Image (cartoon, rainbow, N blue to C red; front, side, top):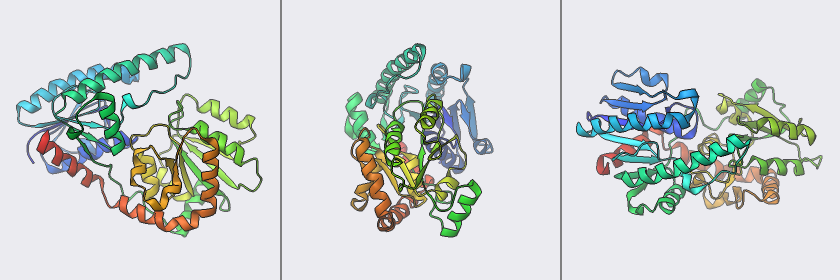
Amino acid sequence: MRRPYTLISGDFVATGGMDRANLALALWLAKQGGPVRLVAHRIADELRAFPNVRFVQVPKPANAYLLGEPLLAAAGRAWALRTRAEGGRVLANGGNCVVPGTNWVHYVHGAYASEPVGGVLRQLKGQASRRLYLGDERRALWRANVIIANSERTRADLVAATGVPDARVHVVYYGSEAERFHPVSPEERAAARVSLGWPGQRRVALFVGALGDRRKGFDTLFQAWARLNAHADWGVDLKVVGMGAQREQWEQEARAAGLSERIQFLGFRRDVPVLLSAADLLVAPTRYEAYGLGVHEALCAGLPALVSRSAGVAERYPATLRDLLLEDPDDVEGLVRALEAWKVNAESWAPHVAALSEVLRGQSWDAMAERIVEVMERFG
């Protein structure tokens, strides 16, 4: 494959589901040897090592995506026109650039509206951003020749939100990094706990997600945890991984509720594979999740994951694990019952989790990238 490829996205880095997926596609293309142009704010250092990769760096004033996006769109359009004139292929993400070619949708702005949080200025900024994103999303998807969605959920959402024909949308699930996320032996799990300073005798549940709004459902989990810890025999600790504007507020509420010993806020972490190796459960009562790479990676690590049935990744669950799917992310009592059921049934569910883990680890990031390029070559 020697035709040029131009990929337009904010970041090609290993953190975050969308960024990690974009990085995987860029790396696969780079390894094919043809010209690869990356129009972005940031790229991973490993991409810079390829002589056939050109990084078109776009400024991000004040480190704000809202200010950087018009610049990204302008640079993306210019490189898209040049690439298509050379007989190449172009891929953009969602509404970040209105160009002909392929559009890879990781999140549908028209499918979910976050509740406003913070001060007046923050709320006004959020409302203005949403209006901008909705318009850009619709224009970009109608301009694209072909659309790739990361789940059937995303396909349905983007068709409903924009009215694009369903036949133009192809679903390609995210890949896996099997060497990083895989089941561990009891000895490896014990070693991971020692390295983290976690007690060996207590079970640990993980929450991984931003604490900037209610989308990830931490408020529901917090209330459920408070009810469960009213009983002395619950015996499970909650570790919270993630940053956001509401983190300090949740820490204060945990102290006020007497939960400081039962809920620990870990902030941003780069050792998520180690955390998954040491934990017993992942909890993700998300209100909107186009896919859910964190849940996917937990399952690859052999960890049962409670997730909202509406999340894209829930499509991958077999019928034998239906009790791990949450019907309503606002239902605190429902989450309490699901957590209690996990504590009782974890051992009997383990073989089914292991089988799903094997399936998910069977599709690599390279396999995902190859499938996307097949779609681009045929329709883009």
